[in-house]
Amino acid sequence: MDSKTQNQQRNKKFRSLFFGGLLPVLAFSILEDRYGVIWGLVAGMVFGVGEILWELLTRKKVDPVTWGGNGMLLVLGGVSLVTQEGIWFKLQPALMEGVFALVLWGSLVWGRPLLLVMAQKQGGLPKNLEGVPPQVAETIRRSLRGMTFRLGLFFWVQFALAIWAALAWSTAAWATLKGVGLTVSLIAYVLVESLVLRYRVRTSRKT
Image (cartoon, rainbow, N blue to C red; front, side, top):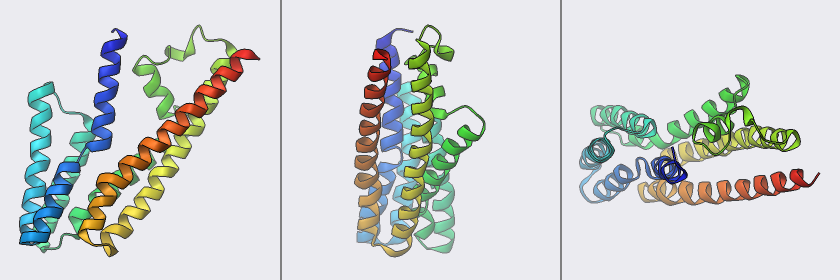
């Protein structure tokens, strides 16, 4: 697989992570404000199904993040329709972030830090870091283990914040947190971590 194809696949995964479930959230918040919770829920669920179908038609497969996020959204949306309470629908982002945190921490417990495994599978790093100088390889392993733990902590904080937003904030504020707050903060956080990793690797090459 060439580097262009790898970059395209990586960008698609990032888009799924950043924007997965965003359209259903916007649809719910707009229609809920104007027409009530039932129409908001219906719109959100329709857009959730639409995201799945769009990926299936354009990419011939659906990203696991899209399946997970929108599948959970449809289940909680159904519960909300039965109870006529939008709170269950609003909890979907929080639950997704909690799951991300547990997956990241679980990968550390199993001795396979998720960020290191992903970097190797996507071609960013050679398998088992073969051909990489020992001191550089150890720096990469240690840094990606730390990043995996801290990213899990980031999602856990977002999980707590999203629960608070679902329970106590207005629908507009909740949607802003999901649509803008998480995306911007995650991009900024990953950018900082990436710059620190590059610096550490460059420094280790000189030792």
